[in-house]
Length: 368
Ligand code: ATP
Image 1 (tube, rainbow, N blue to C red):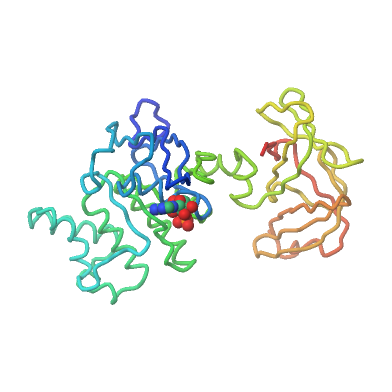
Image 2 (cartoon, protein in one colour; image 1 turned 45 degrees about the vertical axis):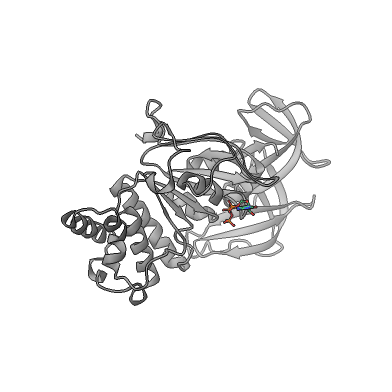
């Protein structure tokens, strides 16, 4: 059971036809979006697509040019940023350098004039949650980057916001620490039950941490779905290409029921795929096939979607290898194969004549 599957639950956040213009530039273009309580939601997209602007409107640092935003069913337009049950954690962390870890975490609670006992208890809880008990008396410059990141998180959760906005929260960490911290972030989100909305341009990060992902481009939401739907059933070539590696083959559609035959090159048999969409006759369409769904073999396999080619390039990645296979048509198909056994390592080499193939259900047919 996932809370966002419950149709009766009021969404925690609702964007209703929200646009944001800066002068005559449209940064956010008529967005409708619902985010539910306890979700870990990621806004993903290239630089300048409007992720931060969307988040700043939630925090109250920007006002929509048109449309409405609701928090727990209430229009938040009249509510100033400091009165929203929303907190934002910045990429820079913005910790106070002269204050200890303890005082940094307590800062917001003190400013609200909470009772001393309550502050002590809450800070203790936050230190425990973020495994910082040992560092409570240190100053930010006396701890590591990863620990500083956890202080920032503890501080933003101290007031128990309903919604925590995280702008590139792991951007300052190196790759390894970043990956570890992703799991920590997921644990903390689950433990506290706070709704997290994270902004990232890193697709792997979004896919790892989030229960749902919104893929954005030029101020629009292109697809909002769970990570596996985004990967397995991308809504467009843009999404397929943005998330992970993919082969894209352009052609003309000939549909019969749920089956599409795609003419893609002179003198080559059509490629077949299943679809739930409708394509008009000869409509330009794109087959998207993930490299790990392309089989590569020395012998010609039976069935549809079998093409011959020659190994052009090999990327050895340890647990798997990616082969770039050049077809007589000039297309290059990427096929990924697991290196399961030592003797199976690189079973093919440069200039080998090979066959690439995939099943009808392995390809997704898309329009632009
Ligand atoms: P990044 O990943 O680089 O942070 P982003 O997706 O978060 O990008 P935004 O910061 O939301 O993008 O910006 C979206 C667009 O709106 C950009 O083209 C940006 O230049 C523009 N923009 C943002 N804030 C303003 C502003 N105050 N005045 C004018 N244009 C702005």
